[in-house]
Length: 324
Image (cartoon, rainbow, N blue to C red):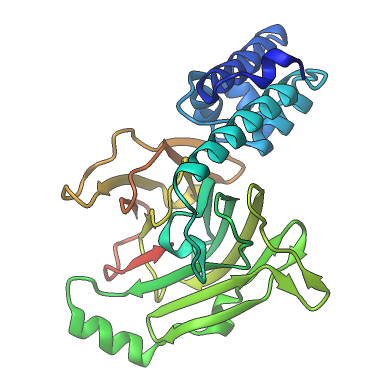
């Protein structure tokens, strides 16, 4: 890194990173969509990165450098960006003393979700959820746990009926078969709330073999998943933005024989439900129809809900699902 790199502003460093990615992509003759697929990202992700709508991340820089065989050129631009970010953070910290709290990220001020990817697979009877989140600790203390929530509402238009159904058919830990990993390590979990239609769980950054907290300035992918039957959860999937999030994407996979139709709505703190600004896209993968949708810099506290129906299967009782 030369002396000029050390003096780059955060904005300049981000622009340099975007330009470097675009340069190497063009050198290799790859469209943005093709590069995104090779890197394992949503098709819009590379476009957002090159336009500057999404800030550089360590994971993206590493994958892009390897995929484009850039000889660490992209990686060095990311390092410059990190240096600029650390310099600005240090300047800000001298002006405003940092506040400490028992669980910093709980206030939304110490942790950022750099990438939130959710996948739902339906086999005709059960749903399997796989969640991947790239978390960054922007606070001053190590983070040792991460909160997730699962809530169900079988009959949303009829609270009494829904409550009765949940009491008779409670959501159980056995059927969920919840599991989570971080850096390839299994994560322990602790139930915070355990109710018939609502589960709140702490994913812990440790296991029987050791601890692996998320330290200030670090980013890490966590993955967790669970399974539920369609007798309890139904034909919509909601994402609630409770922490600052840079990129959110959802993928739904249904058996092609069911001939699924998917649409979605967005709700914010200041506006009622309205259609998603971009429609979910559909493509075929083997014997499944896969629907994808993504957004960059979603508004805090916004809720994005995808709904569907199966044209090849008669409609049953309306039921709903919310994954967070």
